[in-house]
Amino acid sequence: MKLKELLNNVETEKIIGNEEINISGITFNSKEVKAGFLFICISGFKADGHDFAAEAVEKGAVAILAEHEIEGIGATTVIVKNTRKATSTAAANFYDHPDKKLKLIGITGTNGKTTTTYLVKSVLEHSGKKAGLIGTNQNLIGQTVLPSHHTTPDFIELMELLAAMVKEGAEYAVMEVSSHSLALDRVSACKFEVGAFTNITQDHLDFHKTMENYLEAKSKLFSLCRIGVINNDVEAAEYLKDKAKNCEKVITYGKNKAGDVKADNVELCADGVKFDLTYGGETVKISLGIPGEFSVYNALTAISICIGLGFTLSDIAEGISEADGVKGRIEVVKTNTDYTVIIDYAHTPDGLLNIINAIRGFAKGRIVTLFGCGGDRDRTKRPVMGKIAGELSDFCIVTSDNPRSENPGDIIKDILVGIDETDCEYEVVENRFDAIEYALDHAKKDDIILLAGKGHETYQILKDRTIVFDEREIVQKLIGGFEN
Image 1 (cartoon, one colour):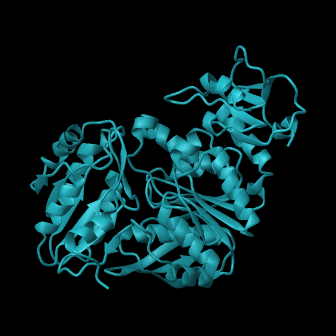
Image 2: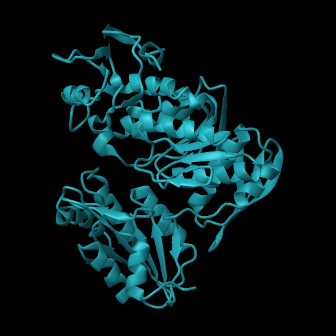
Image 3: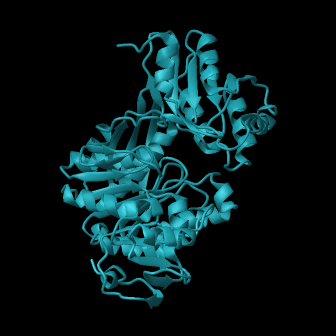
């Protein structure tokens, strides 16, 4: 592709060099540069891509996309105001706009994104449609599973994934859209058929600084979609409706407040949820094999999306009923013990509250919550999570999550500020492997041991390295095998 074609609809301020040169690839990682590439200079939080432009040219880059001129660069240089935003458009051009060849469904919110993407995919596939999925757990193209490194991939990887889905014959792409990706313009070139908002609770304030900024970032999704789907039960519902006023259509859903899509007669069971779904004067029975009140909301989000896509309520109900659980979301580990081990990704205050309340609905014995908080992330949520765990659990084991560059002991001290406000008994075991061993060794009949925070992750990020840490395998090792 010629550089001038790649720059179509990119707002350039200055081009120094030849626009007619051919571009064979694009990247913002200087280590990935090959002959004929366009190298994009991203001003990152830890490093500035402009500092690597010379290295990229030495490796074969024939053009540079930058926010200012770089002295001594012997390659065509394109100057733009914002390389992040420009790259989103350039990547779409390079991969021939795969987002326009698919019906894109974007789901944002603090909690519920991953499960909701799988529920939508289940409905689509039940209806005979081929769908791709992009999210926290994994990326799916047809039946091929690809690893996932971010909730929402960077702008170049995203277009590459969408192009691969088009090649595989997919008609739809269901994707989680993080607040980071919206704030950093990773999806600014995408046009979503449906954009859905699940909920918002405290998270990522290390990046967004305030809840207002966090909400503003997430609400950007409605400027990129044709149909907006909004949870009418969240406090920010009216704000979101205002942000979605330019959508062609807005669908609201709720359980407590009346919305376009309504759940009534909700039954919370140990093996799932059931409720009556009403939309447009029609009512159908919904049954989802994932327990917890939050599962009702996840189902309502997915149902509202599929209504927006034009599917019938009967097809939606059948597709929801066929949905499997998601790895790392209220995942029961099969054991041969008289107690139960559950793994869940809950790593926010609301996520922890939801999962413990869900377990409380079917627990016969104690709820023992093992959890920590991530390092180099929002510190203010640590005591909040400690208090929630202490108030809702019968016993807590406070340990590490992904401490990253922080001292695990300091993170735990922040958590204990909250848990000490409750009457809950707890034990501090800093090493997470030892903490799991302690939990299993002290488990009693009918206990439910909740391993919270890691979920689908099979690693732990320490100060100097990332180690293999799959809690399923650890439980297997400690108890001597899974139940057949």
